[in-house]
Image 1: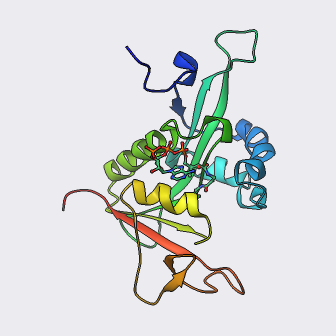
Image 2 (image 1 turned 120 degrees about the horizontal axis):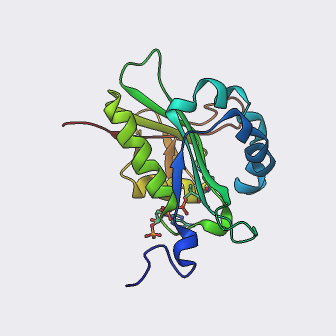
Length: 182
Ligand SMILES: CC(C)(COP(=O)(O)OP(=O)(O)OC[C@H]1O[C@@H](n2cnc3c(N)ncnc32)[C@H](O)[C@@H]1OP(=O)(O)O)[C@@H](O)C(=O)NCCC(=O)NCCS
């Protein structure tokens, strides 16, 4: 049978767990690279792994470079939370898949799992805020059924977005997806 994970076969299988504080160094050392050189490290303070671990995920695969066949390496993470002020809102703060492991469905599998968990906890809407020029992020979230908010936006980089949302030059698109029963 063809392995749906691709030519790397069993190595490409991803396993999810909760992040731990001890993962912080490994994640911050990679996060700028995983975000295409954008300075993202300041957005991944250690406190996220201390106070939001139960609403976050890391994904691991077997490490093909290790001599230990059971050794795993982190190839994806999603840091999110249940909004304390906006009841029923599940917020994705940061999510990424290691560049060499992309387009294998890892991002989708991680988000599907997280969305199901958040729905189980009572969330009725998921939200993520992305720069409109992050074409891949926009396409990815749209592939998951997220839609951009329209009211008050204008087209920026072909996406309905809020100009200067995060301050001067910080344009953002707000993408949401309903959760739970209609
Ligand atoms: C966005 C990201 C998490 C997607 O991870 P991934 O594991 O490659 O995603 P998947 O393989 O599950 O892709 C699902 C779908 O998203 C869309 N997509 C993903 N990458 C794409 C790309 N480079 N170009 C066009 N569409 C893309 C496709 O519709 C894809 O389905 P397909 O492969 O059947 O065509 C990954 O590209 C990433 O980490 N990017 C940098 C960080 C980032 O932008 N994070 C999101 C904002 S916080």
